[in-house]
Image (tube, rainbow, N blue to C red; front, side):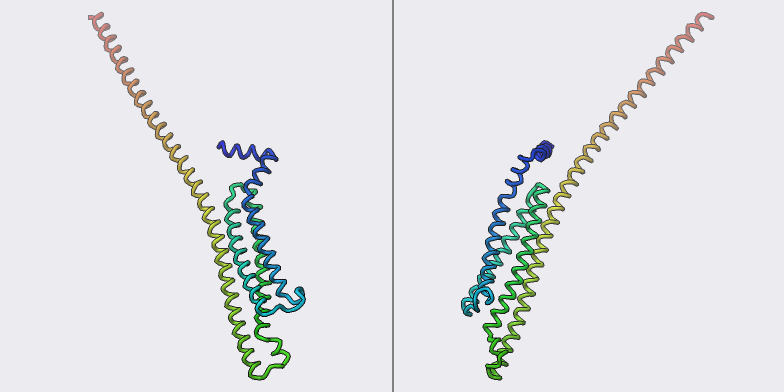
Length: 248
């Protein structure tokens, strides 16, 4: 109760409340800055793969290296986003927690957009490495075009499987996040139920003590009535004996 009262008093003071918010969100802000840095690096790598922004198509070896680097950066950003979600859900203050979870949702949206851009850039690089331009212009022979077409079909199948795995991993991450939130809610409900059980036990103990007191008072009342009846009977007997002795 003292802690809750202290928190309410701190919220009434705007300066103390501002300092409280800043102190609780410092680790999250560091994660946010690192996430921003990773997304900027991914954006830079994807721009280098775009011929319209980089001044021409990059060499195949350089393009593949940029694709791998962008993939690794996306994985790091995904892991960092999970840490940000855990950090946001671990904040006690409801107002700060709601604000941080909103930032996490914005970061998730940005990461999803970068994934889409990455998949598009990766597909373009694979098409370039397979010589799709030569196929379309008709410069290659018939057998070469057929072989390249089969390679392209296999690449598309692999890309489809990769997209399926990426979606499954995203669903698993969201499921894990929901499971953590449900676990926290269950923990809070368990604490509330335990507190309610404690109060019920206290009320039950008070009821038992009150019942014993009432029973004791009832026994005393019965004893007092018996004593009163005995005294009254004795007085009547003595009175009758006096009357009998007077008229005898």
